Amino acid sequence: MARRETPAAGPGSRALIVDVVRSAVTISRGELADKTGLTQPSISIIVRDLIADGIIHEIGSTGSTSGRPRKLIAIDPANRFGVGFHLGPDTLTCVAIDLTGGVVGREVVPRVPHEIWPADRLARRFDDFTECLDLPRGRIEGLAVVAPAPVPGQPDTAHELGLLRAELTDRIGVPVLVENDAAAAALGEFWSRRVSRDQTFGCVYLSTGIGAGLVFGGALHRGAGFDAGELGHVSIAYDGRPCPCGNLGCVEQYASTSATVRTAREDPGLRARLPLDGSEPSAYDAIARAAVNGDPAAYAVLDQAAVFLSMAATSMVNLLDLGRLVLTGPGVALAGSIYARRLRTHLSRTAHARHRHSLAVELSAQPRDAAGIGAAALVVQAAIAPGHTAGAAA
Image (cartoon, rainbow, N blue to C red; front, side, top):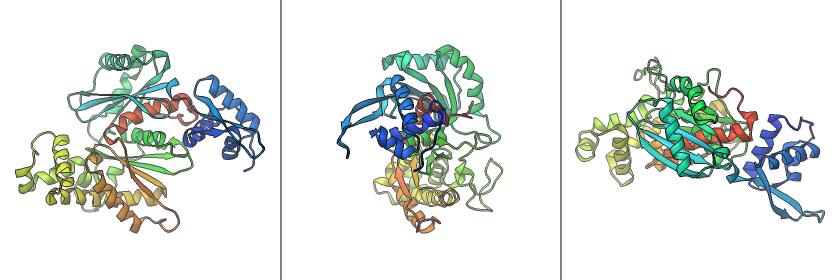
């Protein structure tokens, strides 16, 4: 690879180095030069600054062909922390992660559906959560609050959170970010899985709605109005069910957890033997639990939802030529294998580039917490790889 001179202190070069070290786990300076195309002097300056900032550290050495040992570097996980709050359908999930994306603390607090807590209440929750974990305030890089993307004609949660952002920042004394949950979940999966920035990476977030997050070159793709990834509003039936967005046949009306619960409640047999009259999240979990335990009708309902989701996922995969797709969100927490199997089968027949490269379809290891983990990852990335954060949602 031809060497290119880049200003050593530039955020883009710093982000590049952090991404390569993160995905490699351990690496030498010489290997960094080979993978990035930066000159050795630039590598040395950036690495020295990152060590001084406590972001990376030397962890030993290994042999080389020249006989001189090569010093290895890695992310220093416990030097900084990010905190994320996820406003789910009826809970607030609080997560703290270290610099590698490892979860160091988690807490789930009930809340009234659609309720936006005022800044003082969010600040108290932040203080209580971080104090219980004994996280030094000076090592907390910030807080990100994430929520579902707004539905046209309904209250815009992100906008309301944006209005609270300045007051919340003043109260807790660290930077505050706001993002949608699907985009955050994608970044969290990208960060904690140590995915290379060279991969074209996508994430499908299945919940009461359906969202997607896209990571290109190590950075979230947000679109002109921070609205990229609205997979739920891909139409799979031109004359299908009406959607609040104004379109017909949106996949969200067929494959979201809300749609699946509606379908199950219309089945007299399922309604008779499953507890479907409670909240949508509890009803969906009952369907998923029954499906994986061998109930044929419950399985059929989920499998059909997975078929519908596969149709929309094919459009996204073909449009963006993805190389890796992760399924996450509460909708795949209990019965994710049903969705993963259906998507793998469908995409093996319909992905346009299937004969030219493989497409990995994977399940999240922590689907219920993915958005909260991703929120905290937004903070970590903004702090240690700022070249990716220009244009972050306000």
